[in-house]
Image 1 (spheres, rainbow, N blue to C red):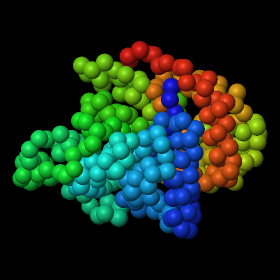
Image 2: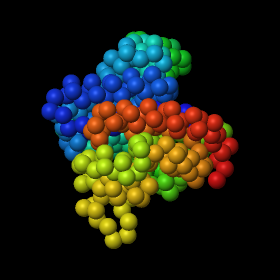
Image 3: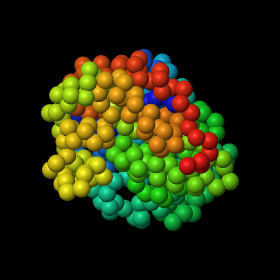
Image 4: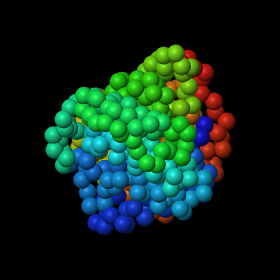
Amino acid sequence: MQFGLFSNGQRRNAVARTSYLEDLDEVVLADGLGMREAWISEHGTFVGFQAPDQLPNADLFACKALERTKHIKIGPGIRPLPFYHPLQVATDCATADHLCDGRYMAGFGAGIGDGGGQRGPLPGNQREMMREAIDLILKAWTADEPFDWNGKIWRGKNWHIIPKPLSKPYMEVGIACSRSDSTLELAAEYDFLPLLSWTPTQRQMTAMMRTYLDAAGGKAPDRRKIRAARFIYVTESREQAKKELRDSDLGALARQGRLDAHLAPGQTRADLSMDSLIDSGAFFCGDGETVYQQCKNFFDETGGFGVLLLMAGKDWGSNENRARSMRAFMTEVAPRLAGLEPRPGAAR
């Protein structure tokens, strides 16, 4: 098992620069601690998550972060393809690949919402647009000559991009997978890295991994491609974690139903709290031994995966305590997990 960050920005600072620097500090720390990768959420193409400090373009952040890091790979988690012209996305990714000296990862998804939001109505179904956009981007990255495109959404002649990706044939690509089986199947079809959100339950996560592996078709299914995210917080004890995190605001995540899967029978969204999520085991919190056992059980019960992504980018707890937690995880917990190997193939 390897380790990384999923920076799911929600800091609620009045000035964006403050949040961006806090996000950057976490990525720099992760790099220094030996984490493999960092996926940076993009928020900005839909109204529901708007905040003064949201990050609408993770490519810009990645290029800045690569100047302050040495090894970690960074990419958007994710760029919502239906809201952009595919040739612009292809060009942006290829340029970032060069600026990041091959440490850039692309990240694609359909985006959240009904196709409206701040960009207005879309010309087609979001998932259909995402698939066509992916095909067009891959063509732009790999075509030796200018090409014509006559798609359902986009059409043009003699298309090409400059530059082509530095990585050959192109950089690693992650695809956001939260609930839809079709997205998991698409990730398997294109041999992309499935980025499993931190909000599903362990049972849902297990089912998602099965869907991805069963859709591998003629390719050998490989659990090591799977990225699984969880909120992890290491401190003296579970009670200390509750104390340090109790004032955290679950905010829009709770109001919009993103955490409904973690409600116990008879509970409502009003019952969601840090205490309840820690007590239920949805959040892995406590001393190093407790967090190790939670992570190992999660790995074993799901069948295993390649990279465990620690959810970051929140203002839950203090900056100092979050940094202390990350250090404790990478020194006390990660070395004990590093030797874990996922089950071969699609074995249950």
